[in-house]
Each structure stands twice: as structure tokens, then as C-alpha cells.
Amino acid sequence: MIKGTILILFLFLIYASNAFAEDKWYLSFYAGQSNHKKYIDYFKLKASPEASYIYVIGAGRQIFRLTSNLTIDAEALLGQHSGKQTNQEVAFALLLRSRFNLSETVNIGITFGDGLSYASTTPKIETDNSEDTSRLLNLLLTEITVGLPKSKIDLFFRIHHRSGIFGLINGIEKGGSNFHTFGIRYFF
Image 1: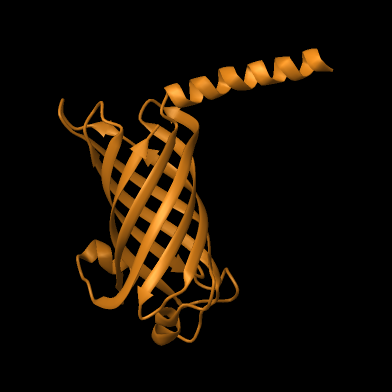
Image 2 (image 1 turned 90 degrees about the vertical axis):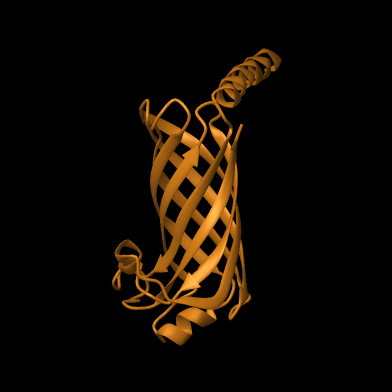
């Protein structure tokens, strides 16, 4: 029994040291403002900011490497809203994260994530925009990242989007919210 426990502990320590050596874990902080427009309007460079804000801390880990530049990550988020709404938000998402050397001095990345978001109360901006909403919705994340090649810190722009996926979740077809945010991420 003791030998088995020691073996398991030894294997865990080897695994943990490799995980940390490869900087698979990260912590993030981002903040931003609500945008009344639809998600697609971000790509048309249209914005209609509202007096509603979000502050998010997150923890994530690379769970699978597809190629040298492409990974699948898992991320947990805890958010606080202010302004028009004051609810908290808890979310979990899987992300497809790319990272490329643009030059010897700059890395860029594009990330797409999908998961679930749960609000502590029904978000006011979602009920103002459409009575069709729910505390539990889909979370869609789109992100552009910039960092130095050997740095453990990235800066990013992220769209934080909650929706019912055209009725797939709780029958919500039009309700949801969008936040355009800026953040910082530290890998370890």
C-alpha cells in the first residue's frame, strides 16, 4: 500500500514538473464594456457601447497540443459586472488557441472558445435588449493575442459573448450580451 502511494506520488511529481516546465498553466485578467450590437457587428467594425462593464479573472491549462502552434485549452472564469448590472458570472470553456511568430520580436495568436456561462441573477442588459434570456447561456470567446516570443506574458483583445445559440439553450433565440475587453495573461 505504501509503495503504491509513493509510486503514485512520484509519477504525479514528474507529471507536475513537466506541466509547469512547459508553461501549460495560465492566469488571466480582462475588463471591458458592453456593446449593444450583435456579435457579427464586431467584424463589421460597428460598436454601440453601453454603461455596463465586466471584470474577469480566469485560470486555464493547455490540455492537448495539436501542432506546435495549435492547442486545446480548458479555462474557468469568474466575472463581476458593474454599471447597468451588478451580477456575478461563472463560466467554463474549451478553447482552440493558435500562436505564431510574426517576426523575431512579436508573437500573435487567435483563439476561439466555447462553453457555458452562468449568471448569479438574470443580467439586466440582456433583459433590456430582449426579454428572451436566461441565467445559463452559451459562452463564445474570440480573442486576438500579442506577446513577445520568450515572454510569459501576453496582452489580448477578447469578445466575451453570451447567447442561447439561436434557441438551442433554454429556447433563447435573441437574448444575450457582448463585451469587448482587453486583458493580460501570465503563463507558468
